[in-house]
Image (cartoon, rainbow, N blue to C red; front, side):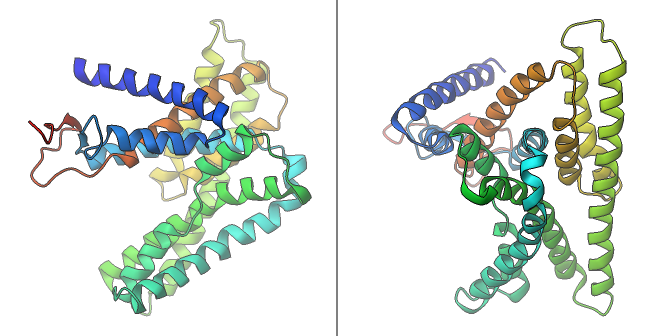
Amino acid sequence: MIQLLLLGSCVILACILCNRLSSRIGIPMLLAFILLGMVFGSEGLVRIDFADFGFAETICSIALIFIMFYGGFGTRWKTAKPAALKALVMSAFGTIFTALFTGLFCHYVLHFGLLEGLLTGAVLGSTDAASVFSVLRSKNLSLKDSTDSLLEVESGSNDPAAYMLTIILLTAMKQGVSSRLPLQILTTAATQILFGLAIGAVLAFVVRWVLLHVDFETNGFDTAFVLASAVLAYALPSAIGGNGYLSAYLMGILLGNSPLPNKKTLVNFFDGLTSLMQMLIFFILDCSPSLPGSPPCGFRLLPSPHS
């Protein structure tokens, strides 16, 4: 336990220092986090083997909730509205075409099975929302013809498309392709989208009403309330078959474009939190897979190759 706390604190401090250094020399912040993960990984200098893939999935999923929520919270709807339709078309058809072309390449060139190749394409089909938000906002980029808003909305909304493609292909691989597959595809897509949008909109209305009419007697409880609401926006639709990330993203957009009390405090808190979540995601994902036979216990230090 003490080793994990020492390691975690050292990693966070190193990421913060790397962020400071990267902003001075012009290296993208996320690239610095990836390089740091390589240094700490099992093939790097510190030689940490991260063995618990289930834990990594849980941590990255939780981190992505806040990244998606704050991505919507920081979206200026007046600027993004003209590009919203284009962004939704890109997020849906762009993800599908990318998955299709990647899947066909894997099938005909790398000799994967057809469904396995398409599954690989579905996993790789969406852009990374954390990277897009970080690059556009850390550099304060203002691209022509609202391209920055187009990219933000597209990167925040293509994950549901990739998620649905992945679920559909996994179902087809498990149950086989049958005449019922098109109906299952439509049902899954409709459930994911409708539940995600409906619950995100309802929760945004409820949270906004509470923030405007309820007096939180303790400072900071309003921030904790929004934090818990963002988690609920993901968990509630996910529990009934909806898309939790779409719900959290929509709630972020609706709340971010509403006149809320202490909004500056919320922005400062979630700005720091999402930066920490980005550090965590890129650090964990860049640690090398565990060696065969290693125990599923999380972090552990590997012996030096010269010992």
